Image 1 (cartoon, helix red, strand yellow):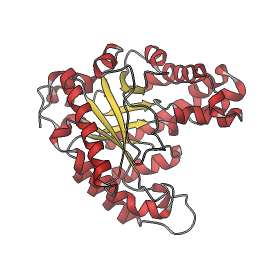
Image 2 (image 1 turned 120 degrees about the vertical axis):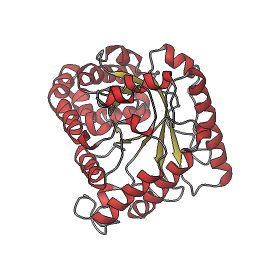
Image 3 (image 1 turned 180 degrees about the vertical axis):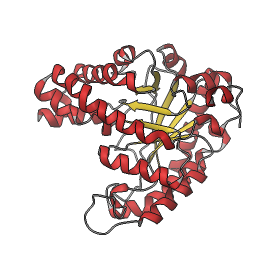
Image 4 (image 1 turned 30 degrees about the vertical axis):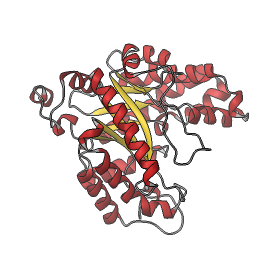
Length: 339
């Protein structure tokens, strides 16, 4: 495969010297608002946008000196983007948060008032969209999603900016935290990667959850009761999804605890996964939400400077097994990056 000069430059901007993406994700909007609301013991509608902005700025300012990039949203994250370390690249989210629960299929929507060109003008080195996808959904639903991804891919191609597709596994009739879903997840992840690896989608990097529900792996998981996989079965799931990915891919933390995410990355390394890094979100900073709400911005900054930094460094140490993104491409800069 080949990659254009502009997309190559964008990927270099958000990766480290090895070509590995060690990025921090805090593009959460509704999810962060709900965390803040829970800590404040108020409805989410009573959490002002200023709190989201201030929280994101603190996270960006304190943690990005230790990451290769940060993923933010243009709604509440532009001040945080300006506060990031000069050494950290910027990814901006292009999708609206959440989905309309009154419409079947968890259909994606783009942000009003933005385009890829406008996100680039705000400083984005790469553009990301999130897609809930299940191969088991109806053909009509999935056809809409395929066309949506094609449009975003074409827009990123026209702007010559890397396109990150975040695939979130789900099933219409099964809750994600259950044993039943854990058994379905490897198939959903692998088939989703196979689908969107086709060239018509113009995806450059996948942002995807690990192909197992780690809480249900024997000897590792925290879930009580029956497990979904032995360790060997879990490793096989990693290898299958790895083979399905036709483009570089990075893992997201999926809102799990820092420990479970570290365990997941350990399994990826043991399986020989070709993952090119991480975009780690709540596993890094979510424990700081209550501190911020209860004790204020100074207490949050202190927590981020100690525990938040420890969380980032713990993930960074697990990236020794990650493979450079350019291993998937033939680029003139590959030899220079590798050296």
